[in-house]
Length: 535
Image (cartoon, rainbow, N blue to C red; front, side):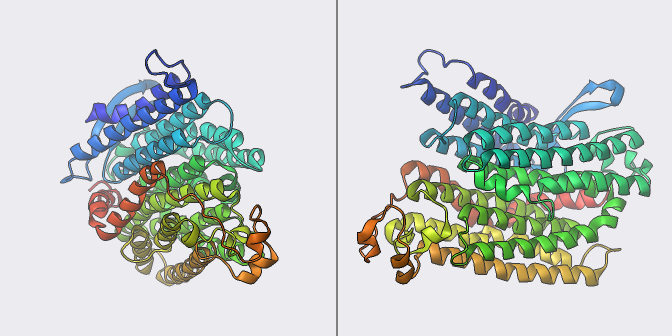
């Protein structure tokens, strides 16, 4: 098991180096581009197989215990160790990361975004996977910081070199926000390490361990510094403004990974570091975190409603990016409640958001390839997308993903948001219940607004707009026949490789919605132990 976990973390990095070399004889395919893309699919497939084997071999009877551990001294003078391990909190995120990266590599094999060398694209994709997997597997604060930073450069280049309009400005905004947040976070991590004498997360999470040496003041300062860095990545309002630009400019697979796994690194840090290691500091800032999370839920929903209205010229990709601000607000609200119910809801919502929003970004990227635009006004007329009539299976899958995102019961999006609000309904002792009831009410209003804008998206994109709108502004390329009311030509429906890349996400969304105990059974014992000081 420990070798499997080490392989999951190290193989993508080795694969990234291998992608830069020429393919060996017999594996070159029709051309060098095909060979390196096949290399990416193979490496991510092997990593996914190893992650699934890790999940199969995991002791599900004791999910709170760290398993598959490796603990090797690295820098003895600072007590920094190569410490790896997984429990019921990190295992789902490891599998989710491996799955999404494999699906992105598979999709890119058939539909590579326009840009420079495919070698560089595959190497960056694999480096990004290595950093993300390491973030969820390491148990040393300094290693967590290094893994946390490893993902920034690959994502920067994926946006800047393979992105769309405004890619340079979006890439710079992404890197500046996240780097500045990380610098502040490093100060908090160093403060914990210096004051406690260790950077080991497992030791620090126990009440009778080095954590006992952290005074209230130290914990407050540490949570303030670490929380800023994690909040930027989460993203928490008002530190979210880099996200819509990054998503809008990023290539399809970049958006999928950014929403599906990179945002989870911030919320995972709150659960793994802030809650168990600095509980007093976390309790001090929990009301403020909950308030900003509730504001983010409302703000994200209102921004989406503004984008979806007729004549606003809203971009569908940007709309989904703003929806992530709202959805991640539920995750942060659950964490801020500091209760097992709320934290379990946050972890469930993390995974659900990765599945559903990853699928949405895949679909919107494919829609742009088919129509040449993600402008909602261009897609809304009867001569626009009108997916139910022009590409019914594609339209049905987009409607399914939208309905899943709004949190309908029976699908994955429901359970996390519901449990996060339950956590806010009865927060941990010492937190103001009236304040958290207010935050819960705002979150409930956010669910109604979410349903409103997502149903409007389905109405406009899948069903088409009014004939009057179509006659006044025919979609580019449709010609006078379409403007005169002739049926719009069919769009390509789902291709085989799209079925292969998207079916797992849809199936897991249904499975998690119908059988939430599969995930909650993993997370709950581990959460209980973290919040109980290792007991």
